[in-house]
Image 1 (cartoon, rainbow, N blue to C red):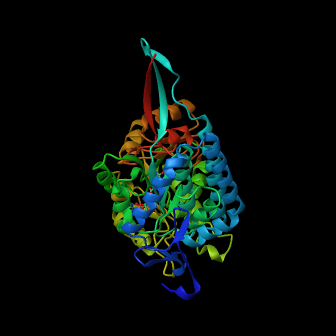
Image 2 (cartoon, rainbow, N blue to C red):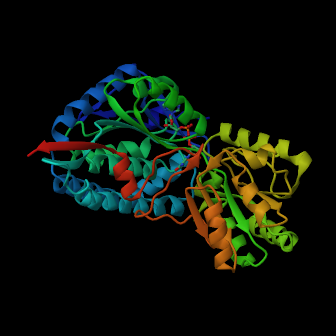
Image 3 (cartoon, rainbow, N blue to C red):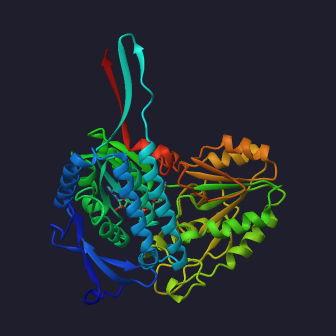
Length: 481
Ligand code: NAD
């Protein structure tokens, strides 16, 4: 790691509408994982910063909760415009901070902007149920109230997009937010705060930049926080849920995934292979919906494995700074490459590595795009999230086994079913326990439709009207006539 402190910017935190240093007096280095260079410093927040941020958000909530849906909607639309105006710069910054190809990082921004615009609209159509006289002489109505201060804890894989998914519905519903980006990728959240500073009243959005270890518990346990929304690892979600349980706090958990791709003998194999080449390795496979666990019909298995190995071997990977031809960048950190390497090494004995399978000897956090054929259903490589550029392929014997294997993991976020027989595809879509099921496609998301898991992938939905409902509490008001 080369530390170029004298050349890098040290960013402050955004609390109560002001830019402030951390109470700890310390900073954290932020690296570009594609080359190991330190590219900036941020404040190393401590519990005192959490307290300041939550208090600022509590104060702002006193007024923000009483704004009209129209006012909140207009503010979110302005924020969306401001992000859009700096899309290119934000994408390039994300690329440098997360090791992503530049084009892919820039492409994330319109999706984030669309999400903010969707919630700007949703703010105005959120409703309780119609009033009625359920008890003679009394009229009942349902209100949806904001929860209060939401702690929004974001991961490093899509830093700005995940921040947007969290703040959009939270602010639209009338909550105020303390956003904690991952300490590995805080830079676009700092720019988001800069943009919000001119649009949102002080304290409505606060951004603090500490590690989960240093401030996670303080933030989750803070009595002023009414709800915690976290996108991250399943173990992080479990830890947060335990801490939040003491005060029975509301939780929104978007956790790990291990998406099956069920390919029947009658599927369009070229389309499947092309899609997996893209969405098994998008963001270097560091995606909770990555098409990483392919379960293929008995008649086409051999042909498909050869086809996929060919496709994947052609992926152009490297430092995004090398040029626009780079399709896959680095992993987020050396520690993540260690994890991927360890899992592939342990998988070797029970399966065949038909593409990749090596950690390159070069500076930066790289791992080759890898395909592993024939692992056992109970093996670690099939059961656990790799979060790297590794796809497994298994041969199933019949539809029942395909369904059983698809469901036989602790995660339940996303899946796809590939077949020329729409009836069969829909039967399987019903039988598998995943929050999103694509038929003859994978990875497609839209702001109008919910995204969230079953089982240990968590609960609560991002995107869609379901998300804005998650960020509210239902209240019954009964009036004696
Ligand atoms: P992570 O769990 O390491 O970190 C996520 C966030 O939690 C970070 O901001 C981190 O600082 C914070 N954190 C860590 N410990 C904490 C604690 N004790 N208290 C409070 N906060 C704490 O996850 P990651 O490695 O940044 O992201 C990758 C994970 O996120 C993968 O498991 C992936 O599947 C998951 N993910 C899920 C979805 C989804 O929609 N379900 C989307 C993207 C990523």
